[in-house]
Length: 80
Image (cartoon, rainbow, N blue to C red; front, side, top):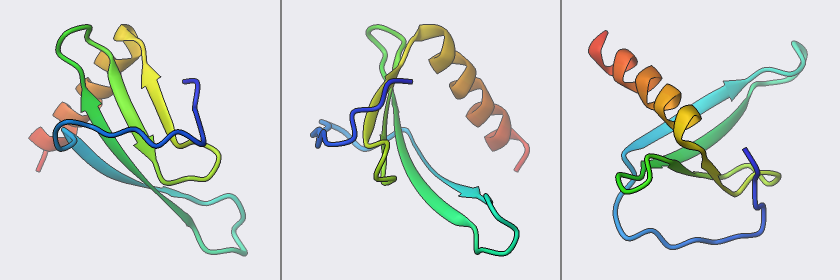
């Protein structure tokens, strides 16, 4: 994933997935929360991701990685 930290894209629709990841880098510090908005693009089978982490911002996943990510979220939603 190549992030574009300073990009502020405008999306034409709501995200397909909104996820919060909990990162724990140091057991003596509270976890860090990172919010992600994910769009699965029908035309080219990629995924567009917007992150609220300062070093990330905006990025695009290629077809193979987008399919893998989509499978993870589909499986997670089926186990609820």
